[in-house]
Amino acid sequence: MTRDRPTQSELEQHLPILPPLVPHGSVNAGVRAAACAAEVLCPALRAGDLAIMDNLAPHKSEPTLALITAASAEVLFLPACSPDLNPIEKMWSKIKALLRRAEARTLVQLAAAIGNAITQVTVRDTVGWFTSCGYRFC
Picture 1 (tube, rainbow, N blue to C red):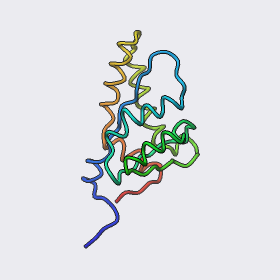
Picture 2: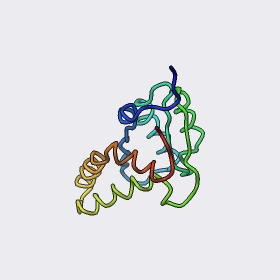
Picture 3: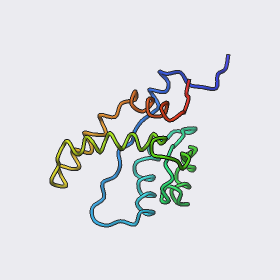
Picture 4: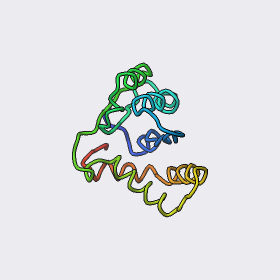
C-alpha cells in the first residue's frame, strides 16, 4: 500500500526549525541569504526535502535557490497573504515574544536568547501554525 501523505510521527521527525544566523555589522541581504543557505540550511537538507520560505526577496535570489536545488531539495514559497495566514509569521511572533521577555541588552545576551527562544519552538507549535493557516498534512 502506498500513501501520499506522511503520518503525524513522520512529520514530527522531519520538521526542523533551523537557527538563523546572527550577523555582525551591516550585511547585503542577498549575500546573507545565500550564506545562510550554504552554511545552515543545505547541510541539513536531504534529497527530496522541502524548504518552505516566505516571499522575502533575498530568499528568491538565484544563488540561494541554486544552493537548495543542488542539495536535491525543493523550494516552496508561501503565498503572499496576511501575516495571520503565514505560519512563519506565527513562529516569529512566538520567538519575538520570548526575546522581549528575555530583555537581552548585549549582543552576547541576544545571541543566547535567540538560541533559547528557538529551542522553545516545538513540532506541535509548527504543525499547529501550518494547520491554523489552512495547510493539511494528514
